[in-house]
Image (cartoon, rainbow, N blue to C red):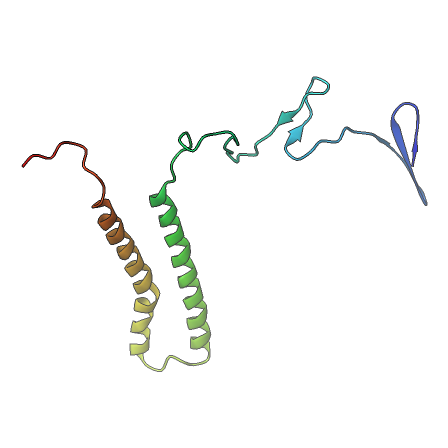
Length: 138
């Protein structure tokens, strides 16, 4: 490569003579700004916490929403896995009677519903340990 005096770069490749304007290099999360030497950071829609933020100032985790999402993902994986297995089993001629088809809804939806009910019961039990706000009168 040869750099000319007007900051243009000429790349010499066999059979290809191409002139390109040299652009400033930016790191990850940086973009060009109208002022020379200034750096503008972009977040790409991902909220980030400041590194110097204290633990008391950080927002608490939303356990209810997070565990519900884990349940949705686990239930979807359960259903997809068993649907694939039952489809392959049915294609091989595994279902002989109509009684075999009654087992399918119980197998597919029973464990995810049981897990949801267990989660709700566990939440109810753990909320029993929470301290009451007002004075207790006897």
